[in-house]
Length: 116
Image (tube, rainbow, N blue to C red; front, side):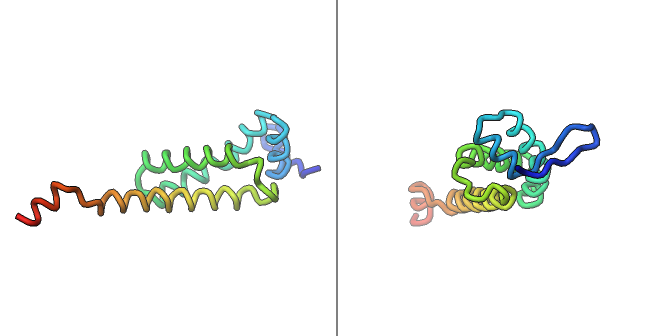
């Protein structure tokens, strides 16, 4: 069984490993607790990396979507934060790569202007 911590409000805060197990068992409250525990930190990281509030929110939403889809495949539930950070970094790298591709994309009309 995982470690149980007590918050200032008297509610129990279970460790991430316990939350992951409960999530896998279908406990929606465990999802809520995991989200509340890590959302603010993820958003801060995204704001620093993107320097854009809307973009940061998009990145974090994509991260949580991937977490939801992949939680059953997490091999070591005790490393959930490290796993979420890996998803965050991969998501941000993918989005930055797409942005660079769009920025560097050459359109037919651009080529015509260059050759005239």
